Image 1: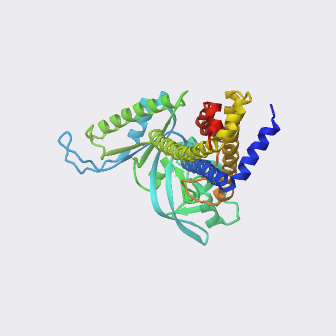
Image 2: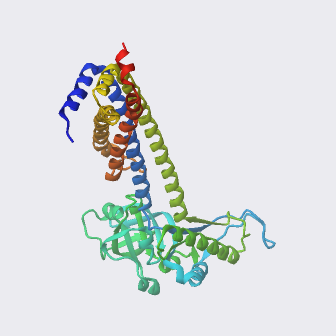
Length: 414
Protein backbone atom coordinates (compact mmCIF):
# COMPACT_ATOMS: atom_id res chain seq x y z
CA UNK A 1 0.00 0.00 0.00
CA UNK A 2 1.33 3.45 -0.95
CA UNK A 3 2.27 5.54 2.10
CA UNK A 4 3.08 9.15 1.22
CA UNK A 5 4.40 9.92 4.69
CA UNK A 6 7.02 7.18 4.42
CA UNK A 7 8.15 8.52 1.05
CA UNK A 8 8.42 12.00 2.55
CA UNK A 9 10.62 10.60 5.32
CA UNK A 10 12.87 8.87 2.78
CA UNK A 11 13.32 12.03 0.72
CA UNK A 12 13.92 14.13 3.81
CA UNK A 13 16.60 11.69 4.98
CA UNK A 14 18.26 11.81 1.55
CA UNK A 15 18.07 15.61 1.46
CA UNK A 16 19.76 15.87 4.85
CA UNK A 17 22.64 13.66 3.77
CA UNK A 18 23.09 14.41 0.06
CA UNK A 19 26.83 13.67 -0.16
CA UNK A 20 26.61 10.50 1.88
CA UNK A 21 23.68 9.22 -0.21
CA UNK A 22 25.43 10.19 -3.45
CA UNK A 23 28.64 8.32 -2.58
CA UNK A 24 26.63 5.29 -1.48
CA UNK A 25 24.71 5.36 -4.74
CA UNK A 26 27.92 5.64 -6.74
CA UNK A 27 29.28 2.48 -5.13
CA UNK A 28 26.15 0.52 -6.06
CA UNK A 29 25.89 2.02 -9.56
CA UNK A 30 29.53 1.26 -10.30
CA UNK A 31 29.02 -2.35 -9.19
CA UNK A 32 26.08 -2.87 -11.57
CA UNK A 33 27.88 -0.93 -14.30
CA UNK A 34 30.98 -3.13 -14.06
CA UNK A 35 28.89 -6.33 -13.93
CA UNK A 36 26.86 -5.49 -17.04
CA UNK A 37 29.91 -4.30 -18.99
CA UNK A 38 31.77 -7.51 -18.15
CA UNK A 39 28.76 -9.62 -19.16
CA UNK A 40 28.50 -7.66 -22.41
CA UNK A 41 32.18 -8.27 -23.09
CA UNK A 42 31.66 -11.98 -22.40
CA UNK A 43 28.76 -12.04 -24.87
CA UNK A 44 30.90 -10.22 -27.43
CA UNK A 45 33.60 -12.87 -27.10
CA UNK A 46 30.96 -15.61 -27.50
CA UNK A 47 29.53 -13.92 -30.61
CA UNK A 48 33.01 -13.63 -32.10
CA UNK A 49 33.75 -17.30 -31.46
CA UNK A 50 30.43 -18.38 -32.94
CA UNK A 51 31.16 -16.25 -36.02
CA UNK A 52 34.48 -18.02 -36.46
CA UNK A 53 32.77 -21.42 -36.38
CA UNK A 54 30.23 -20.25 -38.96
CA UNK A 55 33.00 -20.12 -41.54
CA UNK A 56 32.76 -23.85 -42.11
CA UNK A 57 30.09 -26.49 -41.63
CA UNK A 58 29.46 -27.62 -38.06
CA UNK A 59 31.38 -30.65 -36.88
CA UNK A 60 34.07 -30.94 -39.56
CA UNK A 61 36.67 -33.67 -39.17
CA UNK A 62 39.71 -32.93 -41.32
CA UNK A 63 42.59 -35.35 -41.90
CA UNK A 64 45.99 -34.60 -43.44
CA UNK A 65 49.37 -36.27 -43.78
CA UNK A 66 52.81 -35.51 -42.36
CA UNK A 67 56.17 -37.14 -41.69
CA UNK A 68 56.40 -40.18 -39.44
CA UNK A 69 58.28 -39.80 -36.18
CA UNK A 70 58.55 -43.47 -35.18
CA UNK A 71 59.88 -46.69 -36.66
CA UNK A 72 57.15 -49.18 -37.57
CA UNK A 73 57.16 -52.61 -39.22
CA UNK A 74 60.80 -52.26 -40.23
CA UNK A 75 60.20 -48.84 -41.80
CA UNK A 76 62.40 -45.96 -40.65
CA UNK A 77 60.98 -42.73 -39.22
CA UNK A 78 60.99 -39.64 -41.40
CA UNK A 79 58.74 -41.08 -44.13
CA UNK A 80 56.40 -38.62 -45.84
CA UNK A 81 52.90 -40.10 -45.90
CA UNK A 82 50.76 -39.51 -48.98
CA UNK A 83 47.02 -40.10 -49.15
CA UNK A 84 45.57 -41.75 -52.26
CA UNK A 85 42.09 -42.11 -53.69
CA UNK A 86 41.91 -45.52 -52.02
CA UNK A 87 42.32 -43.91 -48.57
CA UNK A 88 39.28 -41.78 -49.28
CA UNK A 89 37.17 -44.55 -50.83
CA UNK A 90 37.94 -47.03 -48.03
CA UNK A 91 37.09 -44.45 -45.38
CA UNK A 92 33.77 -43.64 -47.05
CA UNK A 93 32.96 -47.31 -47.52
CA UNK A 94 33.66 -48.24 -43.90
CA UNK A 95 31.81 -45.32 -42.30
CA UNK A 96 29.09 -44.75 -44.91
CA UNK A 97 26.21 -45.02 -42.43
CA UNK A 98 27.70 -42.37 -40.13
CA UNK A 99 28.59 -39.73 -42.73
CA UNK A 100 26.57 -36.68 -43.66
CA UNK A 101 29.09 -35.04 -46.01
CA UNK A 102 32.43 -36.25 -47.34
CA UNK A 103 35.06 -34.82 -49.67
CA UNK A 104 38.68 -35.21 -50.68
CA UNK A 105 40.82 -32.36 -52.02
CA UNK A 106 44.08 -31.78 -53.81
CA UNK A 107 45.54 -28.32 -53.27
CA UNK A 108 47.70 -26.11 -55.46
CA UNK A 109 49.11 -22.88 -54.07
CA UNK A 110 50.15 -19.84 -56.05
CA UNK A 111 48.67 -20.86 -59.42
CA UNK A 112 48.48 -18.42 -62.32
CA UNK A 113 44.87 -17.76 -63.32
CA UNK A 114 44.14 -15.54 -66.33
CA UNK A 115 41.25 -14.28 -68.41
CA UNK A 116 42.04 -12.21 -71.48
CA UNK A 117 44.49 -9.52 -70.41
CA UNK A 118 43.71 -9.96 -66.70
CA UNK A 119 45.89 -12.31 -64.68
CA UNK A 120 46.68 -12.97 -61.03
CA UNK A 121 47.84 -15.67 -58.62
CA UNK A 122 45.32 -17.70 -56.66
CA UNK A 123 44.94 -21.03 -54.90
CA UNK A 124 42.97 -23.75 -56.68
CA UNK A 125 41.68 -27.06 -55.40
CA UNK A 126 40.38 -30.26 -56.85
CA UNK A 127 37.27 -31.07 -54.81
CA UNK A 128 34.24 -33.36 -54.56
CA UNK A 129 30.62 -32.09 -54.72
CA UNK A 130 30.06 -32.16 -50.92
CA UNK A 131 32.92 -29.72 -50.40
CA UNK A 132 30.58 -26.75 -50.93
CA UNK A 133 28.62 -27.68 -47.79
CA UNK A 134 31.77 -28.49 -45.83
CA UNK A 135 33.23 -25.08 -46.66
CA UNK A 136 29.84 -23.49 -45.85
CA UNK A 137 30.09 -21.52 -49.09
CA UNK A 138 27.15 -20.29 -51.18
CA UNK A 139 26.90 -20.36 -54.96
CA UNK A 140 25.60 -16.97 -56.12
CA UNK A 141 25.89 -17.56 -59.86
CA UNK A 142 25.65 -20.80 -61.81
CA UNK A 143 26.36 -24.08 -60.00
CA UNK A 144 28.98 -26.05 -58.08
CA UNK A 145 30.99 -29.13 -59.05
CA UNK A 146 28.74 -32.20 -59.47
CA UNK A 147 29.14 -35.98 -59.85
CA UNK A 148 28.83 -35.75 -63.64
CA UNK A 149 31.86 -33.46 -63.75
CA UNK A 150 33.86 -36.04 -61.78
CA UNK A 151 32.77 -38.99 -63.89
CA UNK A 152 33.45 -37.25 -67.23
CA UNK A 153 36.62 -35.39 -66.17
CA UNK A 154 34.99 -32.12 -67.17
CA UNK A 155 37.22 -29.04 -67.39
CA UNK A 156 34.95 -26.75 -65.40
CA UNK A 157 35.73 -24.28 -62.63
CA UNK A 158 33.83 -22.54 -59.82
CA UNK A 159 35.52 -19.26 -58.86
CA UNK A 160 35.35 -17.15 -55.70
CA UNK A 161 33.77 -13.70 -55.74
CA UNK A 162 37.18 -12.06 -55.34
CA UNK A 163 38.50 -13.92 -58.40
CA UNK A 164 35.41 -12.90 -60.35
CA UNK A 165 35.87 -9.24 -59.39
CA UNK A 166 39.59 -9.23 -60.24
CA UNK A 167 39.37 -10.99 -63.60
CA UNK A 168 35.90 -10.20 -64.91
CA UNK A 169 35.03 -6.90 -63.19
CA UNK A 170 31.27 -6.40 -63.89
CA UNK A 171 31.10 -8.97 -66.69
CA UNK A 172 29.15 -12.22 -66.29
CA UNK A 173 31.81 -14.96 -66.05
CA UNK A 174 29.53 -17.96 -66.65
CA UNK A 175 30.54 -19.86 -69.77
CA UNK A 176 33.83 -17.97 -70.14
CA UNK A 177 37.19 -19.73 -70.37
CA UNK A 178 39.95 -19.09 -67.81
CA UNK A 179 43.48 -20.46 -67.96
CA UNK A 180 44.82 -22.11 -64.80
CA UNK A 181 48.54 -22.79 -65.14
CA UNK A 182 47.99 -22.66 -68.94
CA UNK A 183 45.11 -25.18 -68.97
CA UNK A 184 41.68 -23.87 -69.98
CA UNK A 185 38.58 -24.37 -67.84
CA UNK A 186 35.02 -23.14 -68.35
CA UNK A 187 33.54 -21.11 -65.50
CA UNK A 188 30.25 -22.69 -64.38
CA UNK A 189 29.76 -20.97 -61.02
CA UNK A 190 30.70 -18.18 -58.61
CA UNK A 191 30.65 -18.60 -54.80
CA UNK A 192 30.86 -16.48 -51.69
CA UNK A 193 32.25 -17.64 -48.36
CA UNK A 194 31.36 -16.37 -44.86
CA UNK A 195 35.07 -16.41 -44.02
CA UNK A 196 35.50 -13.46 -46.34
CA UNK A 197 37.83 -12.39 -49.11
CA UNK A 198 40.67 -14.76 -48.29
CA UNK A 199 38.47 -17.80 -48.99
CA UNK A 200 37.03 -16.14 -52.08
CA UNK A 201 40.43 -16.07 -53.78
CA UNK A 202 40.09 -19.80 -54.52
CA UNK A 203 39.11 -21.70 -57.63
CA UNK A 204 37.46 -25.11 -57.31
CA UNK A 205 37.83 -27.82 -59.96
CA UNK A 206 36.55 -31.41 -60.17
CA UNK A 207 38.87 -33.69 -58.18
CA UNK A 208 39.22 -36.24 -60.97
CA UNK A 209 40.00 -33.56 -63.58
CA UNK A 210 42.60 -31.94 -61.32
CA UNK A 211 44.45 -35.22 -60.78
CA UNK A 212 44.51 -36.01 -64.50
CA UNK A 213 45.17 -32.51 -65.89
CA UNK A 214 48.06 -31.72 -63.53
CA UNK A 215 49.66 -35.15 -63.46
CA UNK A 216 49.30 -35.98 -59.77
CA UNK A 217 47.90 -39.44 -60.36
CA UNK A 218 45.64 -40.56 -57.51
CA UNK A 219 47.21 -38.33 -54.84
CA UNK A 220 44.98 -36.63 -52.28
CA UNK A 221 45.89 -33.71 -49.98
CA UNK A 222 43.13 -33.75 -47.35
CA UNK A 223 40.05 -35.68 -46.34
CA UNK A 224 36.96 -33.96 -44.92
CA UNK A 225 33.97 -35.52 -43.18
CA UNK A 226 30.90 -34.38 -41.28
CA UNK A 227 28.72 -36.81 -39.33
CA UNK A 228 24.97 -37.27 -39.18
CA UNK A 229 23.19 -34.97 -36.73
CA UNK A 230 22.59 -36.14 -33.18
CA UNK A 231 19.86 -35.19 -30.72
CA UNK A 232 22.26 -33.61 -28.21
CA UNK A 233 25.68 -32.03 -28.24
CA UNK A 234 26.97 -34.70 -25.86
CA UNK A 235 25.94 -37.46 -28.27
CA UNK A 236 27.54 -35.61 -31.19
CA UNK A 237 30.77 -35.16 -29.22
CA UNK A 238 30.94 -38.83 -28.22
CA UNK A 239 30.19 -39.97 -31.78
CA UNK A 240 32.79 -37.64 -33.32
CA UNK A 241 35.47 -38.78 -30.85
CA UNK A 242 34.84 -42.45 -31.64
CA UNK A 243 34.73 -41.77 -35.38
CA UNK A 244 38.02 -39.81 -35.20
CA UNK A 245 39.75 -42.66 -33.35
CA UNK A 246 38.45 -45.31 -35.76
CA UNK A 247 39.30 -43.22 -38.83
CA UNK A 248 42.87 -42.57 -37.67
CA UNK A 249 43.33 -46.25 -36.87
CA UNK A 250 42.14 -47.19 -40.36
CA UNK A 251 44.39 -44.67 -42.15
CA UNK A 252 47.42 -45.44 -39.98
CA UNK A 253 47.06 -49.17 -40.61
CA UNK A 254 46.71 -48.66 -44.36
CA UNK A 255 49.76 -46.37 -44.54
CA UNK A 256 51.97 -48.33 -42.11
CA UNK A 257 52.05 -45.63 -39.45
CA UNK A 258 52.58 -46.61 -35.80
CA UNK A 259 49.32 -46.42 -33.80
CA UNK A 260 50.87 -43.94 -31.35
CA UNK A 261 52.54 -41.78 -34.04
CA UNK A 262 50.45 -38.64 -34.54
CA UNK A 263 53.06 -37.00 -36.77
CA UNK A 264 52.40 -39.22 -39.77
CA UNK A 265 48.67 -38.54 -39.93
CA UNK A 266 47.04 -35.51 -38.35
CA UNK A 267 43.37 -35.03 -37.53
CA UNK A 268 41.34 -32.07 -36.36
CA UNK A 269 37.88 -32.51 -34.89
CA UNK A 270 36.02 -29.18 -34.82
CA UNK A 271 33.38 -30.62 -32.45
CA UNK A 272 36.07 -31.10 -29.80
CA UNK A 273 37.57 -27.71 -30.66
CA UNK A 274 34.17 -26.09 -30.18
CA UNK A 275 33.74 -27.73 -26.78
CA UNK A 276 37.14 -26.50 -25.60
CA UNK A 277 36.49 -22.96 -26.82
CA UNK A 278 32.97 -22.79 -25.41
CA UNK A 279 34.16 -24.21 -22.08
CA UNK A 280 36.84 -21.52 -21.96
CA UNK A 281 34.26 -18.86 -22.77
CA UNK A 282 31.99 -20.22 -20.03
CA UNK A 283 34.82 -19.93 -17.49
CA UNK A 284 35.50 -16.37 -18.64
CA UNK A 285 31.84 -15.42 -18.23
CA UNK A 286 31.63 -17.07 -14.80
CA UNK A 287 34.73 -15.12 -13.79
CA UNK A 288 33.07 -11.91 -15.01
CA UNK A 289 29.97 -12.73 -12.95
CA UNK A 290 32.18 -13.31 -9.91
CA UNK A 291 34.02 -10.00 -10.32
CA UNK A 292 30.77 -8.11 -10.91
CA UNK A 293 28.97 -9.66 -7.96
CA UNK A 294 31.95 -8.99 -5.69
CA UNK A 295 31.82 -5.35 -6.79
CA UNK A 296 28.09 -5.22 -6.03
CA UNK A 297 28.71 -6.79 -2.62
CA UNK A 298 31.21 -4.02 -1.90
CA UNK A 299 28.53 -1.49 -2.76
CA UNK A 300 25.95 -3.31 -0.64
CA UNK A 301 28.30 -3.29 2.34
CA UNK A 302 28.60 0.46 1.89
CA UNK A 303 24.81 0.85 1.83
CA UNK A 304 24.49 -1.37 4.91
CA UNK A 305 27.02 0.72 6.81
CA UNK A 306 25.18 3.88 5.88
CA UNK A 307 21.89 2.40 7.06
CA UNK A 308 23.51 1.41 10.35
CA UNK A 309 24.59 5.03 10.79
CA UNK A 310 21.07 6.18 9.94
CA UNK A 311 19.61 3.79 12.52
CA UNK A 312 22.07 5.10 15.09
CA UNK A 313 21.14 8.70 14.28
CA UNK A 314 17.42 7.92 14.47
CA UNK A 315 17.56 5.79 17.61
CA UNK A 316 15.51 8.24 19.65
CA UNK A 317 12.96 8.65 16.85
CA UNK A 318 12.62 4.87 16.56
CA UNK A 319 12.14 4.64 20.35
CA UNK A 320 9.33 7.20 20.21
CA UNK A 321 7.66 5.31 17.35
CA UNK A 322 7.77 2.06 19.33
CA UNK A 323 6.52 3.82 22.49
CA UNK A 324 3.53 5.08 20.47
CA UNK A 325 2.74 1.53 19.35
CA UNK A 326 4.76 1.01 16.15
CA UNK A 327 5.28 -2.71 15.55
CA UNK A 328 8.76 -4.20 14.89
CA UNK A 329 7.68 -5.14 11.36
CA UNK A 330 6.80 -1.52 10.58
CA UNK A 331 10.23 -0.39 11.80
CA UNK A 332 11.92 -3.05 9.66
CA UNK A 333 9.78 -2.00 6.67
CA UNK A 334 10.78 1.64 7.12
CA UNK A 335 14.51 0.88 7.04
CA UNK A 336 14.24 -1.68 4.24
CA UNK A 337 12.15 0.71 2.16
CA UNK A 338 14.85 3.37 2.25
CA UNK A 339 17.65 0.85 1.62
CA UNK A 340 15.91 -0.77 -1.37
CA UNK A 341 15.00 2.63 -2.83
CA UNK A 342 18.58 3.94 -2.74
CA UNK A 343 20.04 0.69 -4.04
CA UNK A 344 17.50 0.25 -6.83
CA UNK A 345 17.69 3.83 -8.13
CA UNK A 346 21.50 3.81 -8.09
CA UNK A 347 21.55 0.35 -9.67
CA UNK A 348 19.21 1.40 -12.48
CA UNK A 349 21.44 4.36 -13.25
CA UNK A 350 24.44 2.02 -13.47
CA UNK A 351 22.43 -0.44 -15.59
CA UNK A 352 21.26 2.21 -18.05
CA UNK A 353 24.74 3.73 -18.30
CA UNK A 354 26.31 0.34 -19.06
CA UNK A 355 23.66 -0.57 -21.66
CA UNK A 356 24.11 2.83 -23.33
CA UNK A 357 27.89 2.36 -23.44
CA UNK A 358 27.54 -1.12 -24.99
CA UNK A 359 25.06 0.23 -27.53
CA UNK A 360 27.29 3.13 -28.59
CA UNK A 361 30.79 1.69 -28.31
CA UNK A 362 30.08 -1.97 -29.11
CA UNK A 363 29.51 -1.58 -32.88
CA UNK A 364 32.75 0.44 -33.16
CA UNK A 365 34.90 -2.46 -31.99
CA UNK A 366 36.12 -4.50 -34.95
CA UNK A 367 37.78 -7.81 -34.15
CA UNK A 368 37.58 -11.37 -35.45
CA UNK A 369 37.03 -12.75 -31.95
CA UNK A 370 34.90 -9.95 -30.50
CA UNK A 371 31.55 -9.06 -32.05
CA UNK A 372 28.46 -7.13 -31.00
CA UNK A 373 28.78 -7.05 -27.19
CA UNK A 374 25.28 -7.07 -25.73
CA UNK A 375 23.21 -8.06 -22.72
CA UNK A 376 20.01 -9.98 -23.42
CA UNK A 377 16.68 -9.61 -21.62
CA UNK A 378 17.20 -12.53 -19.25
CA UNK A 379 20.49 -11.05 -18.02
CA UNK A 380 18.87 -7.63 -17.56
CA UNK A 381 16.05 -9.27 -15.58
CA UNK A 382 18.59 -11.14 -13.46
CA UNK A 383 20.38 -7.86 -12.78
CA UNK A 384 17.08 -6.29 -11.70
CA UNK A 385 16.47 -9.12 -9.25
CA UNK A 386 20.02 -8.67 -7.94
CA UNK A 387 19.34 -4.98 -7.37
CA UNK A 388 16.25 -5.61 -5.26
CA UNK A 389 17.91 -8.45 -3.37
CA UNK A 390 21.03 -6.36 -2.76
CA UNK A 391 18.91 -3.51 -1.41
CA UNK A 392 17.02 -5.86 0.91
CA UNK A 393 20.24 -7.44 2.19
CA UNK A 394 21.83 -4.03 2.70
CA UNK A 395 18.95 -2.91 4.89
CA UNK A 396 18.08 -6.13 6.68
CA UNK A 397 20.66 -6.08 9.47
CA UNK A 398 20.28 -2.35 10.23
CA UNK A 399 16.49 -2.85 10.16
CA UNK A 400 16.72 -5.85 12.49
CA UNK A 401 18.87 -3.81 14.85
CA UNK A 402 16.33 -0.98 14.76
CA UNK A 403 13.48 -3.40 15.53
CA UNK A 404 15.35 -4.71 18.59
CA UNK A 405 15.73 -1.24 20.15
CA UNK A 406 13.84 -0.93 23.44
CA UNK A 407 11.82 2.28 23.76
CA UNK A 408 13.11 3.12 27.26
CA UNK A 409 16.75 2.79 26.09
CA UNK A 410 16.10 4.74 22.91
CA UNK A 411 14.46 7.61 24.78
CA UNK A 412 17.57 7.97 26.98
CA UNK A 413 19.84 8.08 23.95
CA UNK A 414 21.60 11.36 23.35
